[in-house]
Amino acid sequence: MVWNKGYKELLKLLRDHQKELASLEVDLYGTGEDSDQVMEAAKKLELAVRVNVGRDHADPLFHE
Image (cartoon, rainbow, N blue to C red; front, side, top):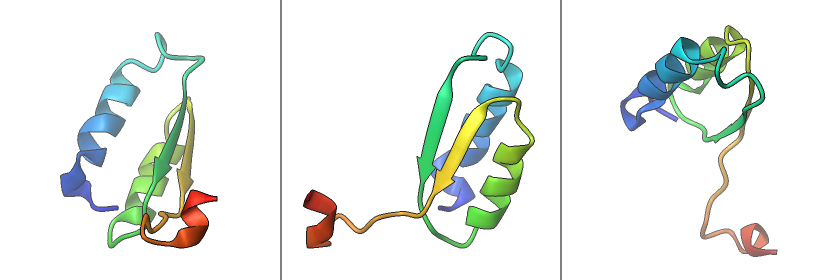
């Protein structure tokens, strides 16, 4: 989870339109150098935004 993957833009759009999107629930997945900052930014929204640990698609448990 790094800002240059579009999280900043996504969170800005969600913030700017959170009144219209009041019933929207968002799940973000990832780990990375910016994950703590992304999580803090998401907490400031008045929307249900969950930040989840990323999963390795090569992990066989992922496909169960």
